[in-house]
Length: 416
Ligand SMILES: Nc1ncnc2c1ncn2[C@@H]1O[C@H](COP(=O)(O)OP(=O)(O)O)[C@@H](O)[C@H]1O
Ligand SMILES: N[C@@H](CC(=O)OP(=O)(O)O)C(=O)O
Image (spheres, rainbow, N blue to C red):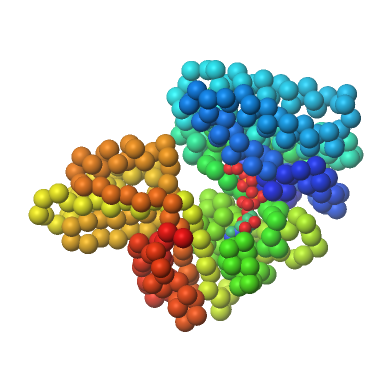
């Protein structure tokens, strides 16, 4: 059995959905588990609906816009009397209903934002059936068990693996299973999400629990490249293959082509990960697996939306281990991860992904012990395996706020 993942870009319009069906027609000899994300930028739109709702602004107009976006796609795929119209109307009714429920913010976020994947999989499933691709629609929430960390559900691997034991029997009946990326269910029975862009991770969870032959994530790029081709189009080279370790490090630094949690479960089970181009499936793509490559070119990763926080001691002492411990435990309690850090005699600075919903709490807590400064809207550029040319280009950049150089890696935090 193989696992395929189709992200938002691959199903952003009706042509994309038709293309998914065309790709699947060429793989009918294999049992397949297909993981699908929300269409296009639907998750961003759902986040916007939530914030408008909280700000007492016109969220209903935004819901109408999102409904129209999906209706336009459906009009190109289905006849007027197709049952899909009612299915999608029901999900939008659930969305409005969920908004009205009194819940904690993160809990409500997951109940609302998860619906993008529910909508997309209903549409894609109905279309596959129309194209004689006999697929079973599975609710991923019935299989992926998480804790109650809403917005960032942690997988209960044992419980998930146990639930997935039912899947091979379903696959004997239907050769294709279609399910949602990004979502699971907590033990208290509510929907959880696995962190933004988490559908790649969902594909890895299914593959790992079911000992799949391989995972293929279908993207709008020819494979994994040494730099995001949207950032530096001239310098980008496609890798034929990459070791798990190298791919994991790239994702850690922020290469958005693969979600950072995807590699570990696959590497642990030795399941290869292919990154292929959905516009041209004949291209070889990149195989990520256990292999050795002698001379890797410089890998350049851009991570946007960074926030630099500096904590300065308020008396004439120096930054101590105890003070650092209090900073680390605050970050850990708020579920924030440091991307790069630096200390001097009287200050400790670190860079994290900016989260609007957490910054006020973080600053308030740090302010109990330190003078605190922060800058937002920064980009962290990491150059791994730098050579003279890339070092020259990214070292001492204009607008840099922090820079670190090790034997093989250069990191610059910069306001671009
Ligand atoms: N090293 C890289 N190699 C290839 N693509 C990259 C790299 N780093 C970032 N990207 C970006 O990742 C994008 C594909 O990932 P993503 O947008 O998450 O796809 P989807 O949401 O459809 O799964 C590409 O369009 C490209 O701009
Ligand atoms: N739809 C979710 C999950 C996801 O992984 O999407 P994509 O595969 O389009 O990156 C998000 O946008 O965060």
